[in-house]
Length: 479
Image 1 (cartoon, rainbow, N blue to C red):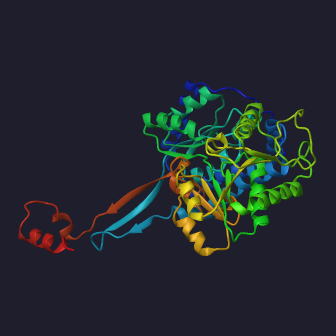
Image 2: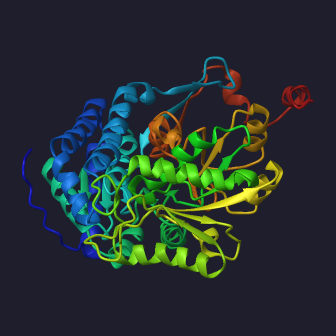
Image 3: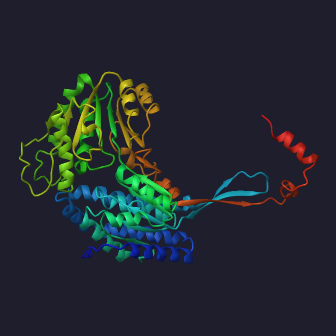
């Protein structure tokens, strides 16, 4: 592994604008890159991740205070490499023009996919590499250049990313800009050819307003309160184990994490017991366990803790899952034990705000119709998770709810299928990427039509219109 010393510097609005102009000028001068150039750029991102995986994991550990090295390699490196390799393997197929029917038999109608130009990536802190670099699979496959603004919440990871990208790419191909919220605001105001933002719904309103000034096309990957439904035919222990596996992964700091779970009213206590057992099997201890990730910083820890405190003050039962009964009041990081909120009510903040931490409200239900109504009364979530062996009930749930994606009998697994679209709907996002959907999102589908040589093709729309045209229209306009 090569050693790179990252140096963090804020990028001024003027410098970002000048960088965008250089990238666009280079793009226009060179034109759409050939397939070899696109593959080479994808390969360089793969090499960057593979060659510096240990440095990436170390930077993530530094930023979080405690983050599993294995989880970092799995979720921030492996996932990126997989997305990039998938795009590389399918690129030749995606680039083929699509032929379509034309009005005349010897005319040719086709769609040619053009790169849009320069794509801006505004990425979050929870998976600093995966959510900044995985979009490059579609962006580079489509033939674009890219500017990346990573989060200031994870400064070590952002600075390292800037150094790694600068070492592997000319700034007119891919560049990383750094800075705080003001830099992010200026970044969204740039006249990109496309902008992808991953983050919270509240910030997305500002991003969308800024992009509107330039009519910049947007992909918004947001969060939302992704529900879990545990049906009466589900294996309760299996469902609890799978829910808690993802709820504790990265300490629940995942946009696709299960936010709350609907459980049959007669099974709430049993679910809580199974959840506690599942956590204990994964994490016999928590406070010094290298497998258990910390909340990213004190501010976010205080926010998540305030959701628990609010629920407790409003009458909820709080079940803190702390297998070794450790004292978390003094610790070098910001670890928080997994926590269940039982008997929650709608006025509690934990049912109103995206949790983004290892806290899980458990909501009892009597009838599946009530669950469907409650889900539909909320903004549409990024994901929906359903556990059951009842196929009729599964169809009922899936047909009568809307979400970005669905996993049945597990949580988050749909995102591992690279060929499926990843994206939200409504408050949970706009547009989708991953696989071919990423290639399409960052491409312009250009219609190309070669006109027929038939005489009718030329004279069809040219006056004077006579009996022949009237006869044609009389026969063509019919039921």
